[in-house]
Image (cartoon, rainbow, N blue to C red; front, side, top):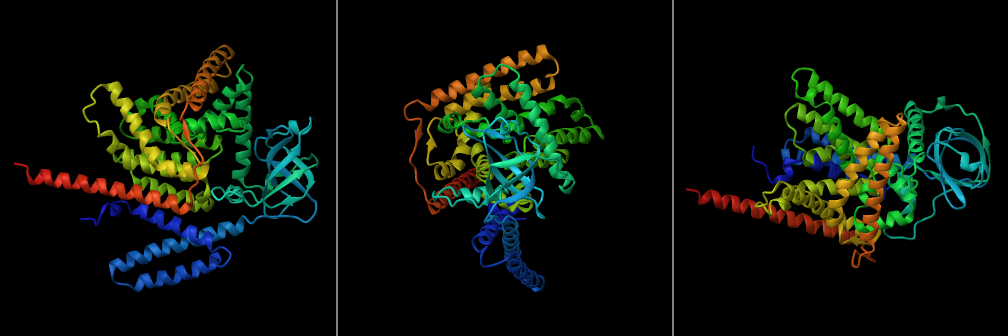
Length: 510
């Protein structure tokens, strides 16, 4: 069947675009139209689709339904996460659902309020003292404090209130009066209780790392890259990695999960080569391990996106269709947005999907610019640079918009960081597996400390090099959209030139 343009080869991409556009409309009109209004219109359009005979109009109406469903889902999600404030002190029972972070004067953590009918997630701050420093994930407490809404952000680029609401927080509070209290967790869903148990397990793994002689900055990077815990990442580390263009390694994403998937694949390689039931069983074991790891590290949008794509890729490989495509990315976006529409406003979600889309579109075209590279090592290096450059094409406008800067040495830094990141993940996995053997664990911890220290040293050195970053960039959202339009137009022009060259070769072929 002949398609009218390349976009028709990717139907799930079109569905995801209309779904996201509808969600944005639902957010912008949230005060005027409720979820029910959008659903009523969607029902009318559905009936129109059923009686329409023209295929083109039917297709347009189907996309209109997707748009309206997206708007309805977003409107409902926004109403469900309304900000809550109190005019006076509120007495309540709560459970600590995140690892407490000890700062200079306060200890901050997330509290899930149990005494309210609908469970409320609150960002809480405690005066730092001997008692608050002993708070741990899963602790129950009784407290009295005032709940406040999030302050409106002064930045045009970053809306902090929207960011917190998109992550499920409905209020903030400063707790001055509190005491430990045994609480009944049976009112929580099994999923929330499981996350508490897994979170406590993650804290115990971090405790095993802390038992060894790490420098603070090295330990912070190791815990972030292996367990997704960024509570120890300070401003200095964050800025160094951001300026060097490798801040993505501190957030678990496709690269980290891909390395783990490779390790698991090599572990069960013999089973995967077998015919019959052994191959699907081995894939099932790998996927189970991947999703257990995703659950362990906190299920951030970037790592969930990677896990969904790996799952789809694994299932496709069983059907001998092991090619990653934009359709897989579109399907992943649809699943994640329908399960949690507020993901749309998560910066990590946006950058993760745009980076992968850009890699799928541009990496091969950049790689074939130098087809004469034959040496195996040089081809590997050029392939790595092609992927890095392709990802940067996609994320650079967003980086400039949200953070006001663009790194200049990202290509050079990524070559080194990919190797060091791989070593850190390998050594971390080995450490957690053999942590019960003290001599082996000590040796692995020393190696892990050395590699992490080398990585931090390299990143900090590059971040202070002259011309390492272009800063003080101020973009409006319209300008960002126009930049992406220019990028897509450039890609379309390249595709058109390739098609013209291909047709010309066929015409003059003997």
